[in-house]
Length: 122
Image (cartoon, rainbow, N blue to C red; front, top):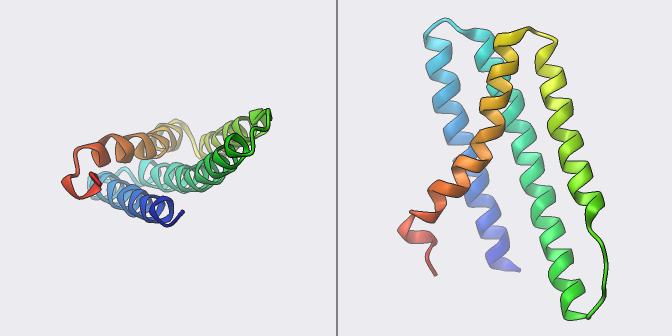
């Protein structure tokens, strides 16, 4: 369980770093709404990561107890959060919506980048 928490914290920091870099770049270029969207999307991505880790721990516990349970509610909740983040971002216009999509992709990018991190290999 401790390694899952370390993994979760490392990915959270990576999401924040990626969102800060991309949001800062767009902010410096004068695209403030895109930066706002990236912040909204990154926040939703962090929430999704926390829920994903929680669901993964439940799934491991259910497998060890040989329970046949369904975890579709976790998928549903995470997709609703992503949809709400994009809906919220769309209220500020197309630029903010695009930024929200970029912010949501920060989670995926953090996971892919973590695979190449030599410290994460254990």
